[in-house]
Image (tube, rainbow, N blue to C red):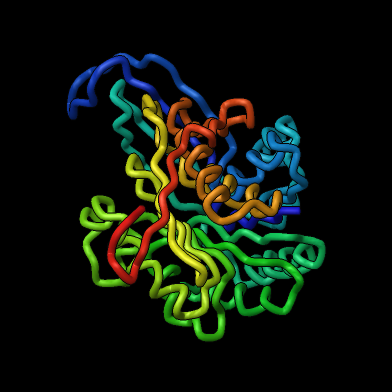
Length: 321
């Protein structure tokens, strides 16, 4: 089972424009979609479509319409309250796939709510294969909250994956000696933020990305899945490093693509695939999501790992083969 924590869930409204975004102009909307979301929620949605048991832990009032949306999608939830209204995020997509995001913040989370979320997560972890901590933290949460959760979760049978950014990511990296998750999924910008490298350089060079990711493996993280947008992704473990490039993809919306990539990797692990095949499945899920509108999560029939090209990276020689 994959248990997800979405401490800062959102309602994602996506507005697709028929032309380019122009400040101050009156623009024509081609379509709109609205969906209960958040990184962990997106991963649980993907698990449901793939027939993998999942549980989404999140702060929500018991009868919030957010839960009704997830129930209609068949996503099992463990809501923790009392919680305020779910925030609304707005995404604007242009015909060429350019995505502009306007993310709101929820009401501050009380210490009691954070403690109850942690308790619910630890209880669920007792029966989980993976626990995923994903997304930003709500106002009021200490920046080291994820790091503390990882340390507590290390005492459960579950393996731990983390996908976050900014100060919570920095705090986690600072505590890897005692709170290293089994899997981290940074993008190029996030990886650059704590390795002193340049995000554009990482996206242009899988070798540089692998070298940066190796610092996390050396610090105790078992696997690092570094997503590079259209350049694919790099996987680094103690056993080696690999780079995967996606098939040609017409990008419609990048929202949720990283979440889909992370699920693809977890699905590969659930299937006990070797590292290169787990990476191929991750990139296939991410590219399939990018070709869909809004925060749409791809179904297994839309995922084509056989079209993903994977090569081994030799970090001792600085080459790929």
